[in-house]
Length: 93
Image 1 (cartoon, helix red, strand yellow):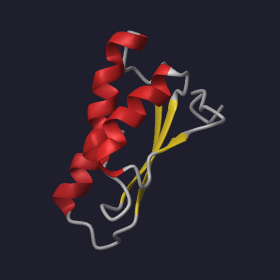
Image 2: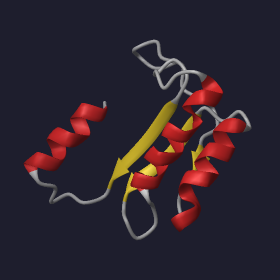
Image 3: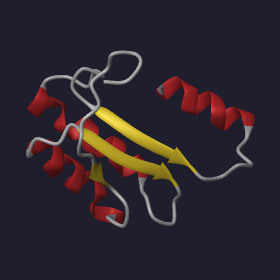
């Protein structure tokens, strides 16, 4: 558990290099029992938009999208990020 007493899964499903298959792969991973998804703000290797689609697609399978049921790990690589982008990211936290 972390300092907020939130249980973090020990194994995360990695979404790098899945390209157009990302949403389907995320749905399959969650359907198989994964409850942690790893992604990053690096369009060359990750499709975060499709990670989101995969999460939406699996809601009927797990019954919720609350933090109690899912965990996501996101990395930001661009240190020259715009203030508006920071605000959008903070909404997700």
